[in-house]
Image (spheres, rainbow, N blue to C red):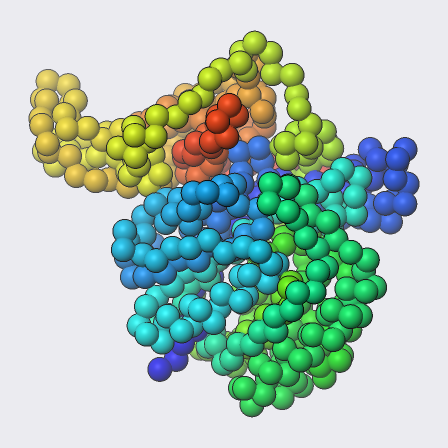
Length: 494
């Protein structure tokens, strides 16, 4: 029986922070950062966090042809989960409408957490249980730090099983050590990291070859047979140095996406793997590794089935569609590191009634409406009474998921009056394909991005935050499926 990856998908936020905007803003304080002011890094919108990133990646990994009720396990790995006590993976499972009987758990504590979970899901697949591994990262950094320029935000998801395997898992290996290259105490937002040369020479350079050799020996694969070597690191050249120590060809070292995305922490090995799988050919061998409290590895071999699978949105497509952000203060505000004056309209108590939230969790998280079996009308929220004019019926509605439906903007409004993190606040009526109309908030939009008749799709985002009690509410928002063409700095249409 062949066990391995049966699907993959990645998500990178649309916004890309121009690194030169950061170095120019901080030049008065940290002129030495100028050398890092090249390219872009991905940055989350104000309504994105590790949970919404994870959902977006998983949706890209699960085309409509994939039955979601097959999954028995869900692992969410992250270095920046929003809830310290509440099962974050439970939110993801509810949003994706995975089975209630699923085993779901959060995994954190090391940058290598996602790669280390591969063996767990492989073992589950051997027992006949399909699993989903999602990794997401939305780290905060100190202003004017190298990490602010090196890091990025993003997520990736892999499904595991024994049916239509795209990449067989030949072997996994792990080396666990309390080698403290970085740490972050409970309750702290920003990690502290140690000097580069020591980490590279005493950590990566010593532990890496041991873990790599173990995986290769277990699978009886020669180092020179590796076609793609994935080793995320913010240390320039450390991936090539490790490859050379292990006897892996320099040409096999995978692009670490530093110029376009940045290092997405615990998600980055899987993100790079998605990039490699989008280009890989049958028969190629991939060595996936990530450092953090030791090192974890997984050795994969691409199968013929890779030709028949496409993620809903490819990583290459998302990278090409990024929107450059040149406002450093916007970045700081979206990361919660710059408190803005919201005015009196922002002084609202946003307490959530948890009992009501649970009562309607299918509608709120799964975005499930109701379709009347008599009239065919679609209602949201679903109710016992179908309010078709002149033909009220009771208990005739059946569940009708809306999350994967596209829609058309019927009407819209943009205003600066309300307290909103990304003004102007844009919202309007959306007509869904197949029926249903709903007043929705638009996200990932700037003035001029939307108009009546425009096509939109649904994305899962943060609705608002109860700062008095430290609670986040989530809901679905509409975002354009395409944007008006604009000119780049060279005057070219993009």
